[in-house]
Each structure stands twice: as C-alpha cells, then as structure tokens.
Image 1 (cartoon, rainbow, N blue to C red):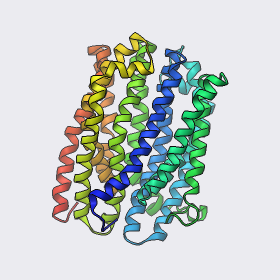
Image 2: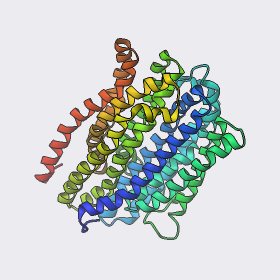
Image 3: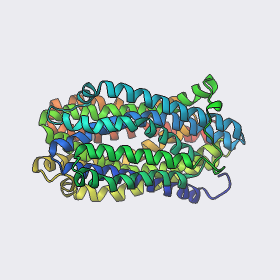
Length: 439
C-alpha cells in the first residue's frame, strides 16, 4: 500500500471494484428489463423500489465508509486491534439500523409506497416488490459494510466475489420466478431477497480463516464517542448522499407523475442506465480510497496526491467513453427496456442530457471520496449533499413548473453541472494545502 507504484496500485484495486459495480448495475438494469416485460405500470414500480433500496444503502454506507476510513488509517499506522473494534461496531450497527427500517416499512407498507411516488396503477406492483426488499434489507445494509471494509483493507477481489455472486444469482432467478413460475413482479422481489441473502453469506465467509485483519465479534462493539461517534461522523457524508439519493427519486417520481406512468417508467430507466455509466468511474474512485487512507495514516501525502491525479484522469476518460454511445443512441437504449413510444420519447431526451454531463460527475464524486477517506467529515458532508440534494431538490421542484416535462428531464444534468462548479475550488484548496504539509 505504501511502496507499490501508485497508478498500478489504484488500477489493481479498482478493477475488481469496477467489475462489481458493473455487474451489480447490470443486474439493476436487467431487473428493470425483466419487470418492464410486465407493462408500463410494473416498470414504474422499479423506480419506487429503487428509492427503498437507497434507504438501506444509506445506512450500509454510513457505517461501512465510517468504519472503512477509520480502519484503513489505523491499519496504515499499525493499529490492528483498533481497526477490529471499528469493523465489529459498524457491522452490528448496520444490522440493527436495517432491522428497524424493515420493521417500520412492513407495518406501513402502503403509505410508504405512496410516499415514494406510487400512482394508483403502480401501487399494487410496488407493494409486492417492496415487501421482499424490506425483508432482506438488513442483510443488504450489513453487506454494504462488509464490502467497504474489504475494499479499505485492499481486498477488493474478495468484495467482488460476494457482490458478483449475488448479482448473477438474481439475474438467473428473475426469469425463472417471474415468468417460469408466473409470480410476476413478486418474483422479482423474491429473486432480489434471495440474492441479497446469498451475497451476505458469501461476504461474511470472507472474514473467516484469518484472510482479513477485520473480524466481527459482539464483544468488540463499542458505543463510545471515539468509536461509534467517529464512525457516524466520518460516514455521515455517505448517509447524507444516500438519503438524498433516496429522496431524489421520490421527488422525481412525484414530479414525473403529472405526465403519467410513462414518464415515471422513462425516468426510472434513465436512472438505471446513467448510473450504470457513472458506476464505472465510481468504481475507479473506490480503488483510490484504501490507497489514500493507508498512505495518509503512514504520512505519505505525496502518494495521496498521486492517487488523486491518476483517479481523476482515468475516471473522466472512462466515463466519457461510455457516455458518448448513450448520447448518440439514447432512443434505442431506452427502447431496449420498454418499447413504448411515449416512454422512449421522454426517456431519450433525459438520457441524452444525462450522458452529456456524466463526465462532470466523476471529479465531484472523487473529491468527496478523497475528503471522506481522509476523515475530513465536514467538507465531505457538504459536497455529498449537492448532486442529489442541495441542487437537485429545488431544480426538480421548480423546473417542471416552468418547462414542463423538459424540466423533469433536465433537473439532474443541471445539478451535476452545479455540483462540479462548487466542488473544484474545494479540491484545489486542499491540493495546495497538502503540498504545504497542511490539509
């Protein structure tokens, strides 16, 4: 971590992470494709469920990134015992938080589905799907923690194995349960729940047999401010980002509902496709995080800056290479998921604009990842709320009133541009300060 050439090290750690992100998001895209075979209203339910998944992901990343950042810096300083306390605490906190969300969601299932933007025609599909997501949600949150801990330990290949197995299983089960057994949308929910349970079990097995520095033992859980408080403080940018990520599709669904189920389905498809493109650059950024944490803990700031430079350049290049085909073939891409003229007409415009701005998203996310890995929670928290929160919320509420459906289509691309403009001065200031031995 502290001696290998930085570019090769980041690339080696990023490759399994990128593969995991790609397959996980290919699963999301595949799930949307299978459900879309059941009709436009069923396709709209995918967008509703995506918001619920974001809630469980929010808690998983809160505790996962909070533990991972602390853990990697302690491992860099040689404090293995301290690292294990952070790992155990985050794992059991994620399980507990996920269980609380699941219990509340199952009790208030229909109000929750309506709050997330279900129309009367989408509601039956959304309830069937959401029930199974809630049942497996605690394991999904804990899996996010394990995945992040493995990455921060520099064991991204192990994390990849757990994620890939669940995603592949989900894609295999979808057609069998949905069409072979005739379970429809509920089959998609069961498939997701089974795959998340399998992924949890496989990831947990990675921490046995001494393959990792981290372990999960109830006796190591610490609710002291120096441990649990630090996990929450450092992980809060991830919580804020994912809470915004959960609220954003709810607002999007509600605003799109003025143009019917077709608009909700179109924006759901665009969200899945654009995130698939962004996931590659995010995976590259995640390859940077353990390098940054270890080397900051070891006092090697020159290597932290080198990792940042390589990650920024590589991520932007890859994002551009993937976004250009989406922009040029937007209508065809949307039609793969739902060959409804109204869905295609709305989705193609939205996807084209999103593809044109996705390159700007990578430097913004990269800056946020850097600050979070260094434990700079305040700056990371501010930047994490911009894209899907501080900028997106007012844009999605105001633009449709002025521009109609075009406002729905442009809200996220404009939020990406504004987030980039605000993030870059923060990054430039930190870079100059780090060269002076500050930061």
